[in-house]
Amino acid sequence: MKKIFLLVLTITVVSIMTITGAATASAKGHNQQPIDLSATIFVTAIDGLETNLHSGWSTIEAESLEGGLITVTEGPAVLQTTYITAEQSSREQFTSFNLYEANVIKGRSDGQFKLISGFTNEVLVLGDYDLKVSSIPGCQIYGEGNWISKAKSSIIAGHGDITVCTNWIWFTPDPQYGGTFMTNVSVTGSASLVD
Image 1: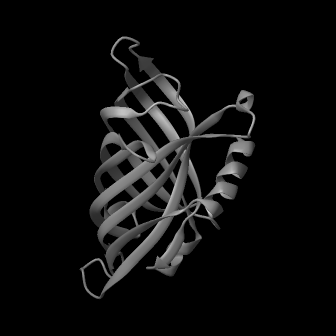
Image 2: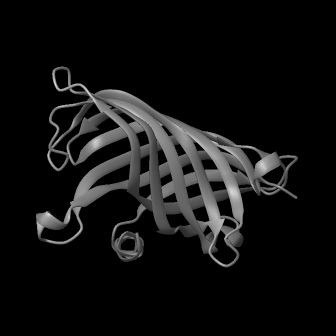
């Protein structure tokens, strides 16, 4: 797990994509300000995997994802020191069961994301998302959907659109050491910074 987390931090610096949105500076929706964030996350654990070799469908009950520090181009400064994690379930139809070459034909996934303070490990933002997935050139798994976070469990309350681009990466150049999926996340929407 330590090797995976070190890999996450190293690759995050190199392969971050932009998350763009709009934010509001208070729980009442006043003083809007833009939010421009970046994040990359990696699959670190899969539980409850069921596959159908005939149809290509796979169902995952629980999938854990972890990322390094997010990059904030614009938005609340407190988010600059947060890192991202997520837990999701999914049902996807793949073209192959060789994960390093498989593309998703269609499917869905939904889950919960957290932005956690890098200083205190406190969850600052807790939200939910759902995705409709397929694939496009350059993305083995391409997803589009929605996200939402609520004031009762986050320092921001908002909603919007989310897209993900996921590809298989090897841990090292030698495939015998395995690999995992890396996801670049892009989010747009609006939010209120909770007072």
